[in-house]
Image (cartoon, rainbow, N blue to C red):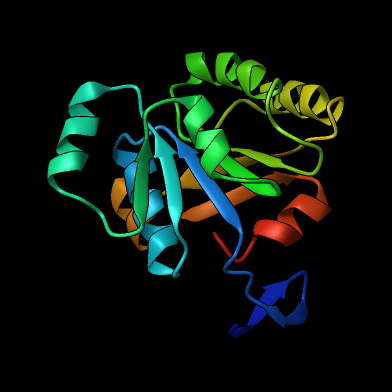
Amino acid sequence: RKIILTWYKNVIHIGKVNRSMNIGIIGLGSMGLNLAKNIISKKYKVYAYEENPEINNDLKKNKVKDLFLTESLNELLNKVISPRIIMLSLPADKVDEVINELTNFLEPEDIVADLGNSLYSKSIERNTLLNSHKINFLGVGVSGGPRGAKNGPAIMVGGSKEAWNKTKHIF
């Protein structure tokens, strides 16, 4: 394990990188795929689910090392064991539907991160829903487009300090 230094609120934190964090991404469009590649570049394995058959076929032909495609949400959740972070890189109109489905399968202390630059009031609603199931939520605004997602996006994160501390090394 590597030792990392993190600059946060004018304090340097020293800690170990947790490479065993179980990471899943739902949505592998241009942003989701490039975020997955960014995370993989930090020596993590990523499990992913994508509904679009064209994207899946392309990824099966042009494999990305340490990116493991799953055929369903259920398979994704079986592969990414708890404690886990499930990142959503989805169109705005799909986020609530997927979160509602996930609440049936996630376990306490799991983390859902919405990477879709959602309106803050929607993030508050999602946080309230997930917290009622003892699931952590992060609203993660991602800036920089697909190239930034791959090479290091600018992010703005809202959510519990506990969830952020468990995941900040990934971002």
